[in-house]
Image 1 (cartoon, rainbow, N blue to C red):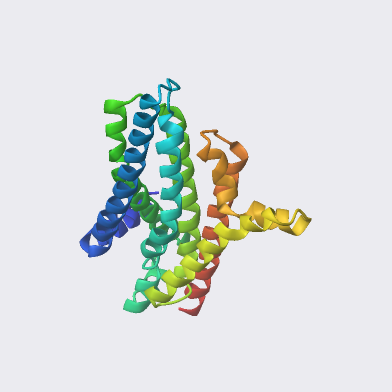
Image 2: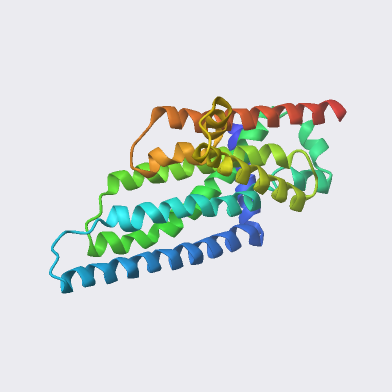
Length: 255
């Protein structure tokens, strides 16, 4: 556990020592903030129009701002996750330090979990920092915080699962650009698998739909805490890290 935490802190430090973390933090916050203020402006406009027409039906902040915004943030993660995970092992290969890492007395599982956890922490920190915008909703409105936290949990679990996939892909090449492109392709594929269910209901279509990350995010997006969907994300994390361990094992053997 101690070795894993040391590796995690080392990776986090390397993120913030380079422009990667700061650039991702700035760009994601700008994009998230722009989308938030557009949703908010539309919400205010609709409420004013309803007041002018004499309608007294209350508008739902969670349904019209928070839910679509967090749903959009999970999609934005498709572009952010490859940039976070691309360097985890690819940079070690490029710098020639992967052999030292593979032959070190630290266990492979400690290296893998330490690196993956550092990437996950960075991802969570970027999302939480962007969600500071919600302070305005709680200051001037009365949103329900419980479904918002459930949706955020879904965003975090989806990101952690896709980062596990990116961690494995990062062990396959020493080129960070290739690792990022392959990770983006894999994440996008896991996203669009659900599309097949819109025109086919056969067994193979249901299997592909079940494998889609967005299928299991929908429940969290509605503010419902689902055990089976959480298990799916944890399974993807396990499979991604398992294949990463096998890839590291082959590197250790070749070293």
